[in-house]
Image 1 (spheres, helix red, strand yellow):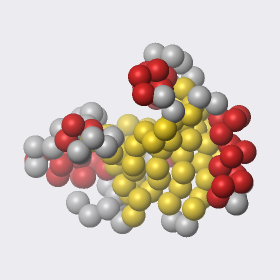
Image 2 (cartoon, rainbow, N blue to C red):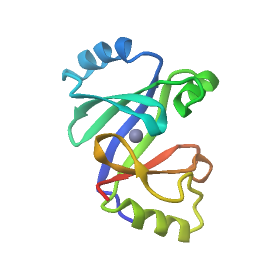
Image 3 (cartoon, helix red, strand yellow):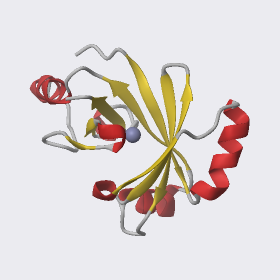
Image 4 (cartoon, rainbow, N blue to C red):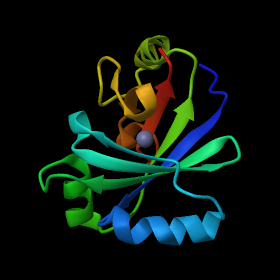
Length: 134
Ligand code: ZN
C-alpha cells in the first residue's frame, strides 16, 4: 500500500454552525460542501487546504460514533485519512499484515468515497481512515 497523500483530517465538533465560520476565517477559504452521511450518523463540512481537506464532523445522534467520541473525549482531532487508489485492495493488504481494522469491507463515506478504518490500537492511537474512489 502506498497512499498518495493525506486526503483529509477529521475533526469532531459539537456544532458545524459554530465551527464553520472559525475554519473559514482560519483557512481563508469557504466551506465548499456540507453533507450528511447517515451510515456514520454525522453531518460533515469540508474545506480545501492544498491537496488535503479538513472534514468537520457533527453528530446527528448521541449514540453515533462522533456523538460517543465527544461524550468521552470532547471535541477535537478524530481521524487522519490516507488517500489510496483502491480501498478494498488496501484493506486486504493491511489484513494480511495482521493490522487490525474496524471495517472488514469498504463502506460509503462523504464525497462518494469508499472508506475503511484501521483500528487506533493498531495505529499507535490514531484512528486512520483509508479513503479512495474504489
Ligand atoms: Zn473522514
